[in-house]
Image (cartoon, rainbow, N blue to C red; front, side, top):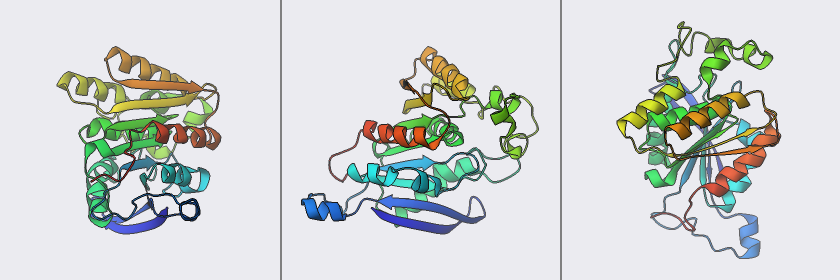
Length: 272
């Protein structure tokens, strides 16, 4: 893999933005084993996974705490890991429009710099915790851009988390209470509420991405995942939910991002 630290001025955020990009390239193992992969074929465009971090994190989280580089290399998959701060990947009421940045400016910019496919069938998005919410939020905001969206231990019932008195919820970033979603106590019925946004898209008849979700059976955030899965099934949405032993930690996310990469409908060779 080529590991690229990219810093550029974002007109959307009106500040410098950081993103890490993995591009599949010839590895020592490929050389030693004689693996024949057309990494540098003329005109080749990589299938791409946009991978979102959780609260308190940044673009380095997935590179430091998981084996995503190895998992993606095996499947010739490019990975884009942006920094989203504690924005919950929405257009913050008192802050930057991260939803617009992730779904519009970032892919447009990266596709001019790197050989990333522009096709919906080659574009995927996933994330953990806050990033799980972000992945589904982006997928429902721009369903024509992503073929698959995956949530790992996602903060899918954000309204419940905002009002919960449980220790984990109380420790959520302070700006979740106001800066991200505004002073409105109840966001139910708005596009920031995944349940409402999902229903809205179904009513519109939108061609939604395939949704995949997983959560640990001992995770404090599991109730919201169960609730979202039930709601999506009732809406007739194409969704898969894998439950497995685990809590809200990197042991779980590292294991299951591997499952996500394995599930993606990738081509054996570069896309042309």
